[in-house]
Image (cartoon, rainbow, N blue to C red):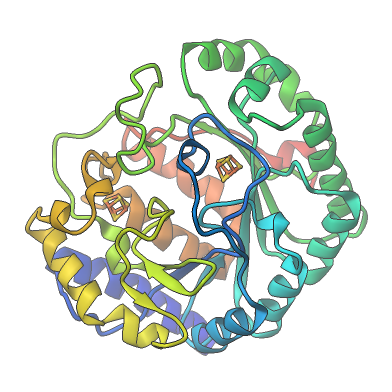
Length: 366
Ligand code: SF4
Ligand code: SF4
């Protein structure tokens, strides 16, 4: 209860100090993205990790991970076990989830699910994962395999279905969502034609939500690729709100501002040499926050140029970055399965909202 009160207070503080443009923050981040590994088994067409040559590939050491959780458990609302790479490649992912669970830290995970064997599904569910997001871009093998290069539509779909069957059989509470990126006109046609049949595959399975959305530009890394249907950018500049609500730790302990900094181009600190608290209000974080407020981000991180996070649609003046983190922080208290309802409300408040909520698990009888 004490921690819930702290989370609620930090949700409000994040919003307030973002609006005020405070540089040194009197609270700690609500959410922590932790990268179990930056290795990946796929070569998705829209992903910067598959477009460039990674020089420094590795997996997070469990000792570093435990130290992060030991400090973060005192203030964090939830962690996301993914930055770049495929988290299922980490040899001890279930151990990471379990360690966080024992420390009362809520865990979420984003995966391409191609390596999700039934054994791994069982271990992850038993470890107490709170929410899993399957990245599954296409309702047909033709479109899916064109985007998720290296993956097999039927095999990966079977992995997800088995995961859901195990969730149902053993009554696990893990929220499960499936996310479809609509990359281009072909993807749109595929979606419109096949979504109903695709939904049927999850009949009577506890999939909480299917949602579709347009791709982001991954920072500016894909902005020159005209064939993709990127999110419509707004006209009003909003300083990047991630700097006021979240922190991202790469597999080797390097702290960066966001999930677009795959290659640590704008390092904001290093764990465990510095504590999370020291990094959060360290000189580099404060300088970068100031640069955001003055639109001088290019001096520090070129990826910000054209990044949709700076020009996205706002709802009640709140840009999507901090909005999503605040909503998920709230869900860490009321349940991650409620996120779909919050998205629906957001869609009603702003018709330009780009995420389309397709279905909730209610129909499928959780
Ligand atoms: S699975 Fe994820 S990290 Fe791997 S190539 Fe695809 S988008 Fe990139
Ligand atoms: S504006 Fe810059 S820091 Fe913020 S999400 Fe985009 S690339 Fe990352």
